[in-house]
Amino acid sequence: MMKMKKVILPLVASVLAVSMLSACGSKSDDGASGGTVKIEFFQNKTEAKATFDKLIAKFNSANPTIKVTQVNPPDAETVLKTRVAKKQVPDVIGLGATDTYSTLAKSGQFEDFTSDPLTKNIQPAYLEMLKAQTGLSTLNGIPFSTNANGVIYNKALFKELGLQVPKTWDEFMTVAQKAKDAGKTPFYLTLKDSWTTLIPFNGLEPGVVGLDFFKQRREGTVTFKDKFREVADKQLQLISFGQKDMYGKGYNDGNVAFAKGESVMYLQGVWAIPEIQKANPGIVLGVFPFPATNDPAKNKLVSGVDTLLTVSKSSKHKEEAKKFIDFLLQQDNVKQYITEQKAFPAVQGVTQDDPSVADLKPSFEQGNLADFADHYIPGAMKVDTIIQGFLQKKDVDAYLNSLDTEWDKVANRK
Image (cartoon, rainbow, N blue to C red; front, side):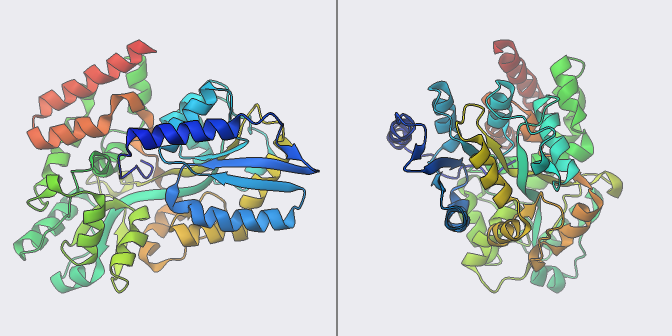
């Protein structure tokens, strides 16, 4: 799962953003003026805006005949879909490998990078993830940065309680029980924000069921009812170790509470680390891969493409757009981005050296990675709200039935 929106923006703001951007996109010129080619770089991560601004300034100063401008609106994916419908597609797009990316790629909006030299230093696992997600034989985006879901833990509390990093599900539950027995909250849960329910769901699915399930489900050979009971049972087991007011707390509350030592562990992605450290610069934390099963070989690190870079097929300045992407993929620029964003590189030869994520290094080095399960689920299903409802009602049969029913509804609309 990519980092989700944590704030539901007022409709007016979204409409304004769309209309303003439509105005931007309806220029009569072709993006070139006075010998300078203008390139629009549209990207969806608000927290990465300042980092990209610095990189863009560096590029523009080295390339005086090209001027890249960043556009980073609220509710970016909705804005992008609106602009595609109006045939005002930005030149360069930075997007998570989400259902939106997949839909736009399949509708032929993006350049084909299958044999493009820009892909030569990209980790093969992430190139395969993009192809697997769209189901296309072509590659329509270039992985730039990646992220990971895991279990963030307070190293001081682990030491105080004599806990070891778990490698299996049973060890994981034993750690949670020991923390609870010591009077501590094992997991700080933020179920008020439905997207946060996807972290454990994505952590469990690849090891317990496997991502091949989604291809089989599209073909109609399996159902959630057949395969997801163990995932459901484990989702309920996890929330039994949460704090009392878990449905009243959201993502921002969780970052601050965990930073203050209010729980031993926190089920979140690495993107939460800068926020936690902001709330408590002195905290010593680590992250371990989610131990979904009792077979350590099956317990892959859930890591997906957080930002991919692509070029609009309709861009009038593809050469300059690719030059900008080539610049972003240079090792020193990738390093700057991942250092500031606490992300991981999709580019080979660059490493994330932050000590807080050192426990994840072996998974990256061995390529022991699995994509986010929710990337394979149609966005229209709103799987996060289905999970949120299930965790409140705790009815496994109704949950599995709901997943199948909603999947079929969306499939039949296509």
